Image (cartoon, rainbow, N blue to C red):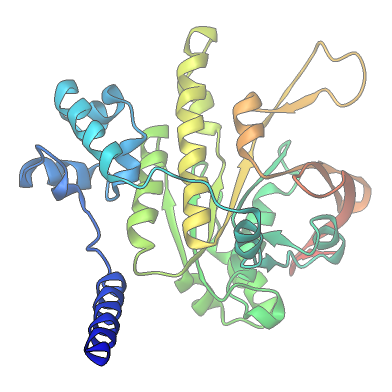
Length: 336
């Protein structure tokens, strides 16, 4: 009798283990209450693949982006909140493990790499700002080429997406830099995917396109050159400032999400404007104000120096001290 009881108990444990080991099917937008095939299609077309992405939206935003009624959107969001795993807290040790996945990309200049603690890192947005001719686009071109290098040479061995807002991307320059680091120029150009953004709305849509393409491509670097030029031209005057900053904020958040999901680096170049009321120090400041400053993980201020040299000043970083690095832009690319 005891043997029978023991056997039954062990069988029960096995049964329980089997039940625990079976993964629950992942919930999709089709599982939301009141969502039929047509509404699900609208949500997917608007880029809402995950329940958590819907759960954190406001009804008005979801209604606008997915072309739905506000009442329907409110009902969908309420359903997503119940079904999605909202608990976003993780332990510090788990976060430290995630930080171990961060990779560093060489710039070609050891002084610039040293300033950034070993290179440009993934899971981050790096903002590079400075006046015309300070070397912002050159850094973009160099990092695009270096991302193709294997890991043991300081690269990412991945694909690059380049959003060009000012028609500054030059394939000839990429070819020069690729030859200098021993990469076949044609191979380099094949792995850099370039799109010209014609206005701010198009620029935002291109990020959605990268998100879609990243499911099949190993995206390691996203460059936006320049981040603010279209926003600056389209949203003019103080009356448009709030709308511009909201759009920029959303744009930056989507770029950060791309960098986190793909363990990729996002490089954005930014323009500067003169601050005539500055009594001392440098009278230039970056466009985009606090929104861009807070959304960027690292901020590099570039300025020209004598003899074709450039000075990069690290003015914001979560874990590195402020400092400066001197580099030059040669035919071969960025060098000490």
